[in-house]
Each structure stands twice: as structure tokens, then as C-alpha cells.
Length: 543
Image (cartoon, rainbow, N blue to C red; front, side):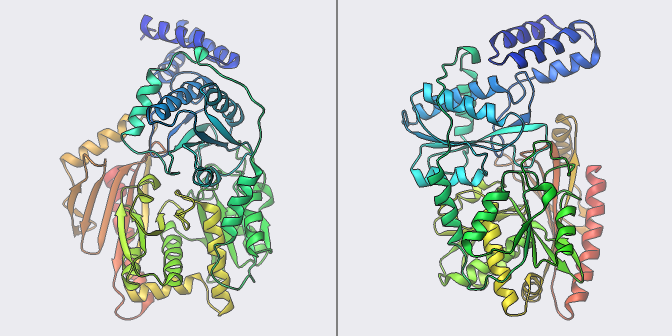
């Protein structure tokens, strides 16, 4: 296998048009090794030049590296040119665009390029050069009446990645056909070196940050503030903003996990900087036990996700995303007194929220995965969540998941319960008795070759199982609306889909067990059935 002249020439052109000298040198070295016949270098070069990143569930994401198929300055410059062209096409020429960033590798340079390209294109720019959490950018779009918002972040992806998240004029993530229109505009963009850029001094609109914090601090519904909290931003940008939001809300007994308190793009204490990953919250739970805390909170690196840890029979554990979601949804509905309120979750999340909503006379709906769909669930939306630790507790102001506002409301709930001698697990027990034990789990297959995911989905469609763990199931294919297969049977649901943000094939499991007698017996039966389903699905996917 040898280097083709087409790939060689394509790479030479990209190098010549690259705006960053370091990136040019990086790709030149890969090309030189490939031309020298090194097989690994040829494979790497083919991957780097395989094609442009595409807008997935949360915008662009990819490894920080030189080449067409990576996150680098030239890709960011051309992407921003495409976004600017799209905004002009939509009639927003010269409008205000909010730009923010996290603290990952490349974020500061990418931020400067976004601001420079937008300024040269005639747009006004509100800079949030913190680095700052993603929810502040989403808030700022609506707060300022901007035409768009751009956040440089890869959220909870591995350390090698970065990304480019885009909000429209409503402060919501873009949906089709806008994603395809933007991709077309990027394809039509001139070479990065030819895209006009106007450098301006970098700054941060502190008034916008302060307005966000004030809004979040206004969310608590109860009067109690007696709560000892331990929080980790997981080496991300949420630590100080979360501390300040909690302080303004009246929660002052809050400690940060010191080893993870400061932004660090290497994420040295976690294999994956995602509270969902096994072991990621170990330092948090150890600190909570050591300090005899009442509540543990983990934010992901850009602070749009929130995970809760609680003491359970003398030891500490993290709540699942479905547990946190139904707790917050139940609490918000219990304090509203508006029966026409709408709550929403996704096709892969627990169905328990639907039963809870019905108990309050509230409306309930299910959407495709991703907050770009959840926040479009309908009028009167007061709460939305997805099982991947995303919660929107204030969708009128932040039309996306927001870990900081979720943390404040969670503290409000925990403090109110504690004042009456109860805890979060007591509420979950009450909900189980009333609506049945709902247990969820997930099976993930991480791949190194993305085409494998497509092949597996094709195989499942052509020969779907007729039973899982001895339970007869029917299959529903959501194509073309979504690349999703849903298997359902009595008290059982399994949803299989490719991840929109990571190289994974995911299966979301739920079993429901009615409580006719002792709650512990019902839980034991549900856990046994869930274990059987997990084993069956793991075998089915080869995970």
C-alpha cells in the first residue's frame, strides 16, 4: 500500500493554506513519513485528511491535530467563515454573536480566531474569554438578544479532543437543515489563509456573567440552606462559577475537591473526564466521606452536566442520571402549582418522569436524544432531562443543559428534605412505591473504527432478536427520523443507537417492576432482571 498522488496533493494544498506554522510543520512530518513508506504514517495521514468534521449532536468535535479531519486553527477559521455566511443567509448580517470557551488544549487560540473572523465579517462580538462554562454562553444569547452563540468546548470528551458548539438566535443548538447548510457553507469557504481576520483585544463581559449567576441564585424554592456540600469541576471550568452561584443562593458550606479544582486540559486524575465513567467520581466520594458531607456534586469539564452523590447505607455512591432527573423533575413540579406545565425527557431515558408528571396533572413528552430536541419539546416547558446527566431546570433562560443551575436546585431540594429529616433516597423510594421500581443501565461498545458501528446497526436491523433475557420483544426502527432501534417487552425496554459525541454504540436498558408488597423485594426482582438483560444485550453487541 503506497501513498496516492491524490492524497499527497490534497495534503500539500492543506499545508500551503494552513494559518498555523506549528500545524503546517506537524502535518509535513506526517506526510514525509508517509512518503517514506512508513505504513503507520500513511494510515494516520489518510485519517487526518479523510474528510471534514461534521455537525453531530453537539456541533463539531474531534482530536486537536493538524489536517482536515481534526480540530485546529484552520478548521476553526473555515468553520467560522461558514457560520458567518449562514447567518448572513438567515438575515442576521452585522448582528451580535456571543463567543465563549473552555480551558482545553487549543481553546484560547480557537477563541481568538472565531472572534477575528466574525469581526472581519462585520459582526458584533460579545466575548466571554474566561475560560467559562458553556451554559453562560447559552444564557448570554437570550440575555443579549444575540443572533448566535459559539462555545469552544469538547465538554466531557477525552483530553485529546476539542470542539465547536453553536447556538442559534433562540439560544438553542442547531437542528436540521441548518447543520447541513452550515456544512455546505464550510465546504464553499476559501482556504483558511485567505479568510479575512481582524484581531481585536480580548475581553470578558463580566456583566453577562454576573447576570447569569444572579439568575441561577434566584432558583431555590425552599428556605433552608443548612447543607454541607463537596463539589468537583473535574479539572474543568465550573468550579469558581459554581461556588459563586451557590454562595449567592445562600449555600456557603461548599468545598471543592482540591486535586480537581483548577482547570487542567490534561485531566490528570481521571481516565475520562466524564462523571458517568467508572472511577471518575472516586475522589469526590472520598472527599464527601472524609468531610461528612450531606451532598456530593460532580460537574463535567464545561459544567453543562451535573451528577449527584449521596450516602447510601453508610457508604457513598453516585446517583444515575435518571435518578437525578426524576428527583429534580418531581421537585420542580411539586413547587409550581401550574397543571399545564410541560416536562420532557428522551427516548433513551427512564419512563418514570411520565408517571410523575401524570400525578401532578402536568404534560409530558419524549423527544429524540439531545437537548437540541428537548428544549423544543413544546410551550410551557419547565424542566427537561436526559439520562447522560443533563438537566435543564430553567429552560426559559438557558435553553440547554446546565450543570450549575441543576446543582443549585439539587442543593435546594436536599436542604429542604434534610430540614424535615429526609433525604434524596427517601424521595426515590416514595416514587418507586407509587409508580413502580424503574431501573436503568447502559451497555456501551467503544470502537476504534467508526464504520463498525454502522455494520452492527445494519446487522441488528436485518436479524433483530425476538427475545432478550427470556422476555419476548418487538422491535421498532426509528429510521429515517433517527438511527435508533427500540426493543420493548413486558416491563422491559432497550434502545440501541450510535453516540452523537463519542465513538460508541450505546444500548439503554430499563426494567419496571410493580411494588405490590415489600419495596426491597421489588427492587431485588428488578435488579435480577436488569442483570439478565444487561448480559443478553452485552452478548448481542459484543461488548
